[in-house]
Every structure is written in structure tokens, then in C-alpha cells.
Image (cartoon, rainbow, N blue to C red; front, top):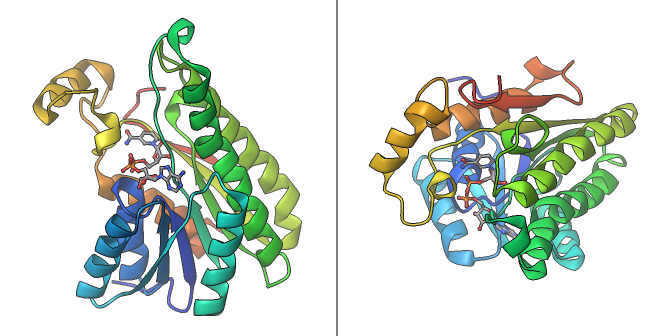
Length: 252
Ligand code: NAD
């Protein structure tokens, strides 16, 4: 395998599970030093263990992306411990579903504070470092449920993710002159707990996906991670302000 990210320091929020962990393993497999961040130490430590078991380099920092002091500390710690920050994958997110008329304001606030404010705060602190240190690459996780398609009972989530798409594209225009390349990914249903309905088995989800997605299945973690890796790679050097849909045709 090529090692396109040797010497690069990659910061991944939501790195203790799902797409974040898959991307962490993929970056480490191509030579990067990966810092995984999230609220709980235990799943982050597990990601570090998995990477180290394959001979990679990784570190974990607990941080809540909806807290500006936490995110400032996360970026500062990454730079102090590893000598820089070259690539950021702002991927932490939560899902709240339900009819808008029944959604309480606390659930709305939780969704916006993690999915949208979390990406804003992450970019704010990352850009401040990258613009003074030779540039970098930022990739934010939006969703196909947002700028690309909408469904009932997912309005608040869609609003938060459409805003991530818009923020990413605006940031791309703003930052490319400073050597910072910003893009987003918009996954459809991927094989993580988030694409399971409450109480749904994986078999039941597989049945549902036959109709819900033209390709007839959920996306794999490898398919999601490889899109992130490509956007971060030199091969995507001319790709700026793109929102890459990975959804098996759901929003086509
Ligand atoms: P996941 O639940 O495994 O990952 C989300 C991660 O974010 C978790 O590790 C969680 O601990 C972390 N997180 C949540 N709140 C946080 C906070 N305040 N601070 C720091 N970390 C926090 O699910 P996933 O599917 O891997 O989701 C990753 C991203 O992909 C999310 O942004 C999600 O909205 C998006 N997404 C997922 C799907 C899907 O079907 N799985 C589809 C489209 C978009």
C-alpha cells in the first residue's frame, strides 16, 4: 500500500466509532499520525489500540465538539504533542428524529450544538492554526439528508446537515487563498448504529434498504472512509468546496 500521509498529523472528531474510526484506521494505514477525539475516553482508546495493533501511530484526546474551550484545547494538544495539524476530519454528529411538533427544544439545541456548532468551532480553531502554519485540509461530515434530500421526521437533522454543507463550501472559498482546502462528505445510510432505527436489527435494516436506496444496501465503512481519504489526498488537490455524496443513489 502507498503511504500518502507519512509525516501528516490527522485530527478526527467522533473517532471512537463508525465512520470516524474507519477513517482513523485508513489514515494510519497510509502512514499518518492520527489523533482521535470524542467525549468518552474508552472508545477512543479502543481506536488507538486497533491502530497500534497494525503498527500505526495514534493518540486520543477527550473533547466535546460543542464546547469552544474543549475544541481549542484539542487543537492545541494535537499541535503540542505531534508538532502540527495538517488534516482535520470533523465528523462528530448525533441524530434526533421525530415529528417537528413533538420535538422539544432541548433535542433541537443538542442537534444544532453538536452537528453545526461543533463543525463551526472545529474549523474556527483549526483554520487559525493552519493559516499560520502552511495550510492544510479540512473535511466535514454532512449527510445526504440535508442539502441533497429530505425525509419526514428528520427535519432538524437535515437542517443541521444542510448547514454543514453550506458552511463547508463558504469556508472553502474563504480559506483556499490561505492554503486550506475545505470539502464535505454527504453519506447516505452507512453500516453504523446511526442508520438503525430504534430497536431495528441489521437484517430488518437490510430489508428496508432494498427499497430505500437504489443500490439496495447500506454503504460499508470502507466505502465511506475511502471517500475521506481521497478528499484529503494530493490527488484531490484541485477539489475545493465539494460536497461528495456517497449514498448508493438515494438522492440521485
Ligand atoms: P457514530 O454514532 O458511530 O459516530 C458519531 C460519533 O460522534 C461518535 O463517536 C460519538 O461519540 C461522537 N460524538 C457525538 N457527539 C459528540 C460531541 N458532542 N463531541 C465529540 N464527539 C461526539 O455514527 P457514524 O455513522 O459513524 O456517524 C459519523 C458522522 O456521519 C455523523 O456526523 C453522522 O451524522 C454522519 N452520517 C452518518 C450516516 C450513517 O448512516 N451512519 C449517514 C449520514 C451521515
